[in-house]
Amino acid sequence: MAYANIASKSLLTAVVGTDNFPSWYNLKVPYLKLTDLSKLPRAKLTVATFWTTIEPAIKNASGKVVHYCQGYEGFLPHNKKLLDKIEGAYNYRVAKWVTTPFLKDFIEKRFKVPAFVLPPTVENFFRPLPKVKPTIYPKIAIVGSKKAYTKGVETALEAFRFISLSKRVRLVRISNWPFTDEEKVENGKYYYNITPKKVAEVIRRADLLLAPYWWIEGFGLPILEALASGIPSVVSDIPSLRYLANYLPKANPHDSNTFAAKGLQLLSCQRKWLYLKIMGIVTSLKYRELWSSKRLLTAYRWALNI
Image (cartoon, rainbow, N blue to C red; front, side, top):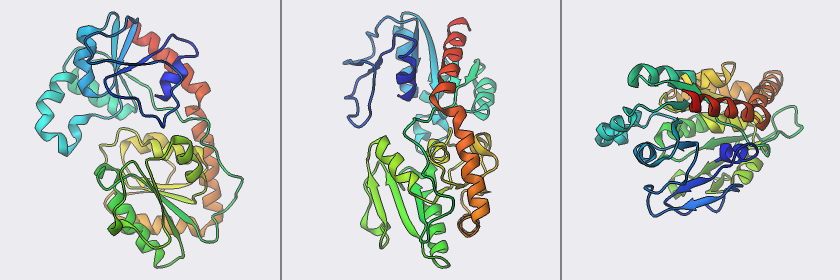
């Protein structure tokens, strides 16, 4: 949705769907709620998103179609029964925007269609606080729900428990799913289904993000948001996060001991913590609106001429 807002500054843009648009997002372009996707508005370029929108876009768009793939749904274990349908949608000869070079290589080799790397953008309200070291009792943030298993929340929570045995720390959780009483810890802060601006406010007040994402994650937007907020992260050693910020401390996404050790090391070393904060802020600049708008216009022209 952030790209829709950016596109509206240069192009006539609208978002189309069959559900009510979420009230928590500040969409700056028209939202057209349709009973189905058989009557799409006329457009030079129609962008399909989730795999189920590919076929309706191809059949009903008046102009060119591009599919913005932010992660291949066929990788997800819970989609095993839908794999034939997913692959059927991906086998349509439609060009794709993708979030990482890893995904580009996979899509081009597997489905024999051209792909253009268009990573996510980070919104301007994600910004750092002027602190140069972790707080006395550091806040450790974990973004995601146990239900969204590719976020590695179980590993992150176990790593937090290990860190808390050596250092007094506080837990901050952000999720689109409700939290159960069993997963809550004493003095933890829990934020459920909050707006992006509230997410930014919470993240910038943290001291560390633990992100043991599985390799099938398409990009890792919460890590980018943490970088823009000046918050160092310990992340999984997976292709998407090596592309985003290869300098971050990494570990196997199922190795809570290593996640804890590297997190504790960061919280105990002001120099390393500050270095990663500065590197993150610098990295995030190329994902801000200025550069994202240029990439989007390039991707738009590419899709029209492919």
